Image 1 (cartoon, rainbow, N blue to C red):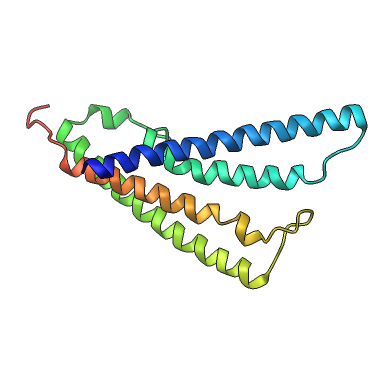
Image 2 (spheres, helix red, strand yellow):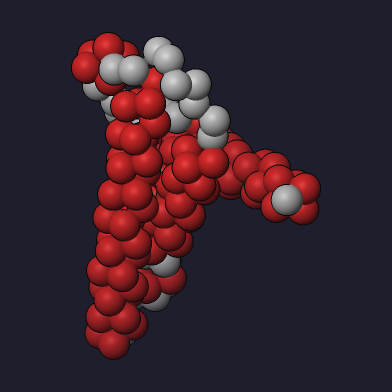
Length: 164
C-alpha cells in the first residue's frame, strides 16, 4: 500500500509538471509571436498548431488532475443535506459511473486514433502526424478513469459512522 501511495505522489508531480510546462510553453510562444509580429512584422507560422496541441494536452491531461484535486463541477445542494451513509453510497455510485464513462471514452478515443493513423493525416505546417498529437486524448481519459477508480476504492473502504 505504501508503494502505491508513493507512486501516486510521484504521478501527481508528473501531472503537475506536464501541465505547468505546457502552460508556460504556450504562454512564451504566444508572447514571442506577438513581439515578433509587432516589432519585426513577422509572425511565427507554427504557433497556431502548437497552441492547439497545447490546449489538447491541457484539457485531457488536466482531466485526471482535476479529478484528483476534486476540482470538477459539482452541484452539492441535495448531497450536503444527505446523511453521511447516503453521501458515501452516492459517492460510490458517482465514482463508478464516472470511471466507466471515462473508460468508454478512452475506447472511443483509441478508435479515433486508429482512424487517424490509417488516414495518415499530418498537420499543415509542422507535418506532425495527427494521431501523435491526438494521443493525449485517450491518455487523459484513461488517467482520469484510473483516478475515479482510485476514488471509488477510497469511498468503498472508508469508515462512516452509523449516525449522521
